[in-house]
Image 1: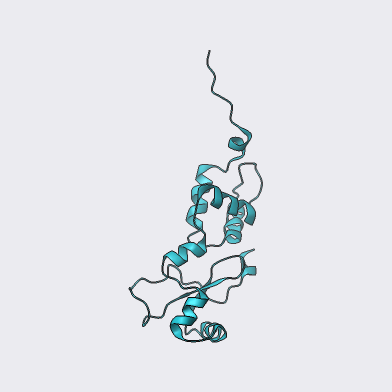
Image 2 (image 1 turned 180 degrees about the horizontal axis):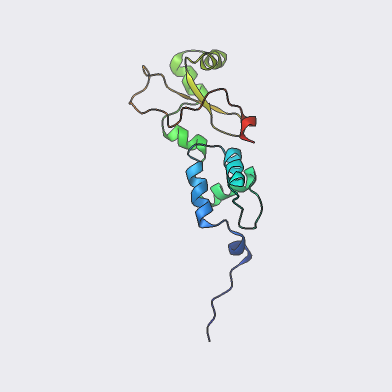
Length: 144
């Protein structure tokens, strides 16, 4: 008689494939903390049966090589504050002022409060548009 080899502890505690796919999909719009919050609201659990935390989502991202929201936004053409300031010829303070005034589109892209900016039409090389139109008044604290 032949029996299948028992699963290792790591394999028994791994987050289910369906939940990993859901995490990948959510990372296109949300930070790690926001993803954890959404998964908990939906009643999802880690492979160990625990509620999701920011660290759990980050570990799933790392182990499956999923890109963070920030990396996905950079890949889509969003600019770092340093790059946006250089392109516009303004200071970081002025960039923040223009964002709050609605003159520059910005968005929080991490749980640490990092911002990315969508280049103005006059500076953009293509016609792509930001994937989301979330208000720029969010803060990293809104994630939890």
